[in-house]
Image (tube, rainbow, N blue to C red; front, side, top):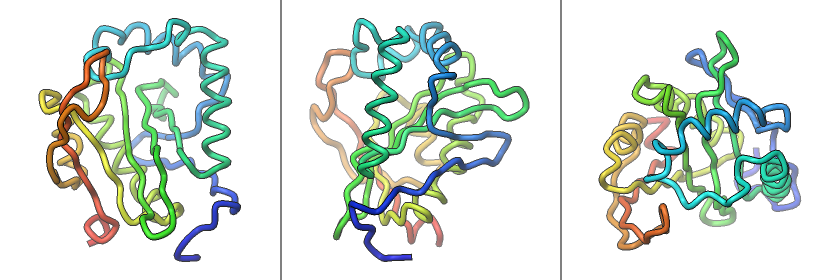
Length: 195
């Protein structure tokens, strides 16, 4: 495997499985389950996410999202996944590796969400533990970064359980729910993960 992947090389297809979960790129056939879970989880997710576009839960909004995902995948900029429970193919959440940087950096930023009915059951920790080997392996990343609002203690616990190290705090780092908010910054190195 090449140390540095060239931008023109095709990204590998990733569909990690394990711990009773399967992760894969979203498809149009996921719309009904995705929109239902996001709608029922709106109040739960709103404090931790950017403001949703007015048409976010519409079929056309989802189609636009899929087009952006396709472009990002082709350009090796981002890798979106939906997380399904294998025993019943129930959608439980999503995770995206975004802001992929190559060359001397070989890094990306991870973000995730879990549906309200599935929160607190270990699904996100399990999903990240299933996904991380592919990010460090097939995608050949050196570093995965994450940012978390300090009051989101559940998310802080997920990152720490997965081996991420808190590296600092960024003031007014991301605009979440319409407000620029401080975030803890976390990092996980390939050496730390494999070590």
